[in-house]
Image (cartoon, rainbow, N blue to C red):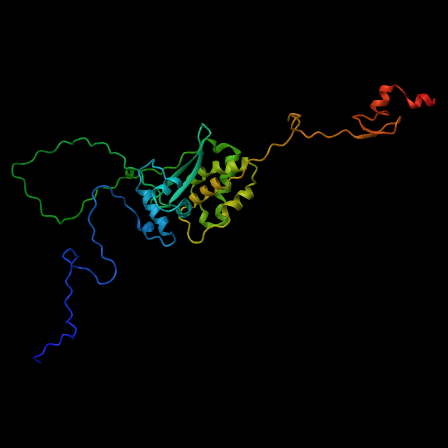
Length: 318
């Protein structure tokens, strides 16, 4: 026992925690050390940050887009220049966000003829934006009754949060979206009826009235290009993703903008210039003088050579 054995393993040393470690650190899983943000922060819902069907790139792009100010560019080339991923992966992630209702992209034609893409970001798909609170008129001061010199103290009341009395006029009336200018035209009614009946093909395509009015001009553009209403319906309802559709209007807007058919070619009519109308050749005739075939707008008995020679075989034979 008096000899020291240097080959024996040393005793296990106690684990010394880091001085900056949290006192409630769990041995497994993640530990959050949160500091309250006061400037430059964005509120992101867990329905996006912990989405079960979106890819990690789509979740990251959704968080980045929601943190941008209004008017910032979020096209594919701008995002590809900002992140290391290429344009193909960026475009695929944007389509994921659009299919789940976090983005809505529509194409608009400017008065100059240029076509631009308008992007709308939804931080909570399917929810209706809250109306801003209306300012209440200031109440006129009422005269206070005269008080006595030594008023009696009020009895002690329990701490109960007081709420203002509810009045019938405090509830704002329901607001409906304004009717678009072209709602009275037959084409707009046909497009609106087509969009409203999509729920018969798939119950997830139940659209509110404001989305029907917003998408009806895009459907009208399809009808103006010769697409039948049944063809438009099949295009909008074919190959829908599985699971719940958080924002069906965004998916329909994407399909209407990306799959719009080309306009039909012009058909030759009586007013079309002769240069573009097909010209049919004159019928073939046989000359009675030389028996040579020639083309003529009317049934002649002789060809041009026989007429110029002035010889009529019928008259000579007579």
